[in-house]
Image (cartoon, rainbow, N blue to C red; front, side, top):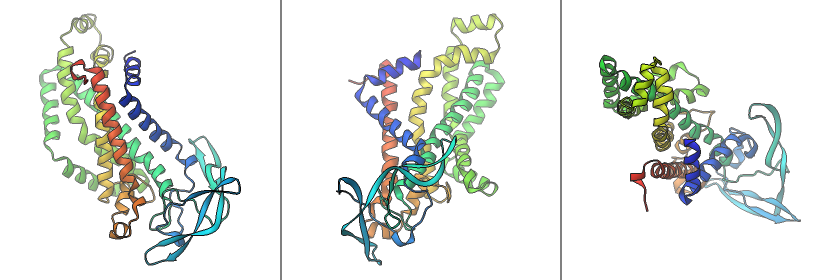
Length: 350
């Protein structure tokens, strides 16, 4: 009921609708990356490195892809071939994948007729891989790493903070000292230390879960501290005391009486904290300590685009992952501000 009321209030605010719409579009694109991506994430074409975005032209009554030829290999300059284009095919066949993990198929939203043509909506990178396809697959890592991370953080924070605020005494003392120790540790150095310690024990395809665990271990302490204070206040309410007198267990009281009163705060806090996980993964991958090849993430793509050649020759399409991170973080922050205004009447803005 609370979530439905909050959702209804979000739809009444233009900024809420805009930010929620952007995030829904991003997550939908990430889920349907196999369908939307013209090529596999690591499909290379060494003859078309640093290819600019291909133009779409209307020819012979259909939408077609402009053909290009390499005119200067030293500076990766391409020129459009006049009068030559390749037809676009909707729902054509491409590389094989398993749709949502259910069944195998080769159907893609956009494909191109002709083995010589390439469809580069956002250009190609240094090995001829399609940036648009890698951007979609990278969104799965960069976006869902925030959702999984905040789920773990919120769960740990609620258990430690809720139990600490409910029981008090020695449990509260020990739990809060652990929380203060975690908060006193420099986040960046702890992040690098955990990453270096865990890296040798996991393969590249397992590094996604390693990054989630690392970011969650760093971020749960602040949530636990806030939830402890809120639980201390809620514990004094009469309905909680009545539940205690009826003999209900502490975990049942936390689930039925304490947690519903924390839903609003947890929702706002989660929305405002997810960008931190996205930026954390991007920072690790940019430093070469996060997601590794052959996987893809926005941070890894930015790391591969830090060559001086990219800026000197104006290969701007390789910086689109940075724009995607910017849009995602701004959308989450705006949505968090809207939710805060809805939940807390004192924070309402005109």
